[in-house]
View (tube, rainbow, N blue to C red):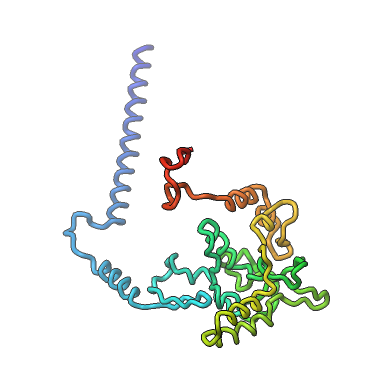
Length: 289
């Protein structure tokens, strides 16, 4: 009995070894064919690829071409490199309807290094009037809609599931208090005055420029809408769902996570090691804390 059992175990072991030899051999053969088909003959003499030179030449040629980027009062000429993320103009749709950007540019927030990128991101889809202007100084807008950037007319809510995020061909604007026929608050009188003011600016005195500047900004409020005014769970400034945002997106924008991030973002401070004007630890004695 023991002799038969020993023979059976040897047979099983032999069969197992043969099986794995076949499997490993097949795997090795398949991998070899795959590598040869993918990489080509790796033992062939290495020669400079003409396609590589063509690619380099094409990139060099592209850098010689210039493309105009529209940024409000600035028109920048940049090397034309398709799809490159450093092309700021690709992030801002041409907005010829908003007269504010004729002086301030499409990325107007520059005062705070900590907040400017966050605020300028909102310029993709929110008009300046939402945060900075009022129809009447003592009243806040309660209704908002989307203004088409091409026609300067109110339009339906854009489909936010399609296309590039933030680039909807329209911006959110506050509506003037006209129940039957809502009108966008676009500050038409100030816009017309600004056009004439810019044409005559070179011939104006400093006093005249200051007075004209006050007229242009007469409906701007002293304290603009803050981040937390829109991103809070109690009373958000913008009616997200009415503007076409999904329930999930609207809930996220007013969630505690976003509100907490906004609160921290507004009080964000750069570490001293990144601030060349900050006192060192030797000067204060507590900077390391």
